[in-house]
Amino acid sequence: RKEVEQDPGPFNVPEGATVAFNCTYSNSASQSFFWYRQDCRKEPKLLMSVYSSGNEDGRFTAQLNRASQYISLLIRDSKLSDSATYLCVVRGTTNKLVFGAGTILRVKS
Amino acid sequence: GAGVSQSPSNKVTEKGKDVELRCDPISGHTALYWYRQSLGQGLEFLIYFQGNSAPDKSGLPSDRFSAERTGGSVSTLTIQRTQQEDSAVYLCASSLDLRLNTQYFGPGTRLTVL
Image 1: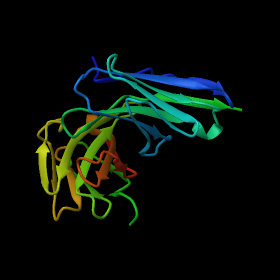
Image 2: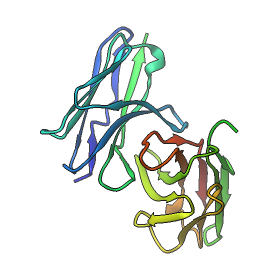
Image 3: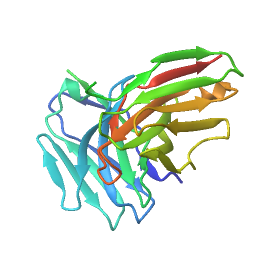
């Protein structure tokens, strides 16, 4: 079983739609959680950290459920520019980040 | 520079040759990380440095891979006797220190082994 699992998609949605991505992780001792975004043939960039209380940044909302070892990302009012691969990232007890394989989002007009 | 830089941006080599990939972290960042990303795959952790020290080398795929960092700044990843399965994008990231988790990635080096 992979340490971080994501639905690869692709998720094809129209502009303005709300879309949710899920991620599960296997290491219950994981300490920090993130969503990164990666555009085609570009490097990953931090989208947002994920906190137990849930956090929001504009149209993006991230949730963490430690009991279920589950992380989610909700994107409201999708824009064409949101099209990218979304990477679920977990840091365990070591200092390395473990990346999921990513979920592809395609927003269409 | 403002961000992490890597060179070369593209490298094509023949099987069996050695290659050296370079990473210049953001100035002042003490932690530096190497990952690789194969086509359609997620990022695979290779190694990290805190200063010039690499406490965890467990991610290096084989003993043909080595990395060093000097002066707490530039790092090189060396792959000896390259194989076709080494073809991937090699990404470097840096962070202010190990406790601060925001890692800033460089643009990567696309390695193709023929």
